[in-house]
Image (cartoon, rainbow, N blue to C red; front, side):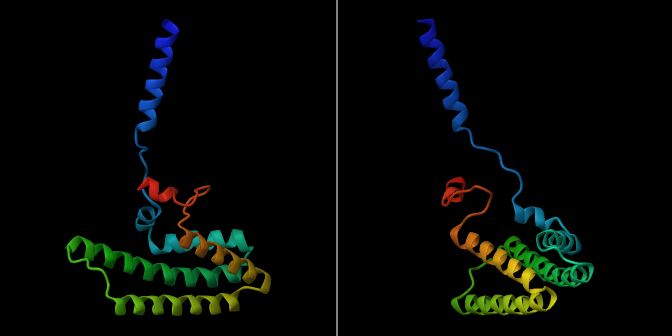
Amino acid sequence: MKTFLVIVLAAATLQITAQQPRQEGPKDHERMMNLSAEEMANLQTKKMTLRLDLNDKQQKEIYAMNLENAKVRKAHMAARKAQRESGNAERPSQEQRVEMMNAMLDHKIEMKEKMKTILNEEQFAKWEKAQAKMEHKKRSGLKGKGEKRGERMKKE
């Protein structure tokens, strides 16, 4: 009888702890909001240096490009945050979405052309492969390491 009670108590304890929600820290975009444009560009350039084995000249050129992009991103994030906080955050119209998509694709094309001039063929191939992998993750909803499709939806 004692063993039965111990087993029931252990099972109840496990059930209760399994049902408690996990406490998560800040999301990636929240951490990025706290960084300056220079810090964001520096981190991104260092990651690319490790991944692509960049020389000093390439690092400087890519840092300048990353810094420009980070400043634009920070401005967009600040504008969206101000719009949300003001209470008049509306969904963009169909025309606005098309315009934003065109601008984003034009920017990607420009980035690809710049990267083609900065990197050698081997480095450019690695960079393109990494970009394709990131696009796949975005489209499939995969965010973290080892996260399976649909897991993110379960967490939210």
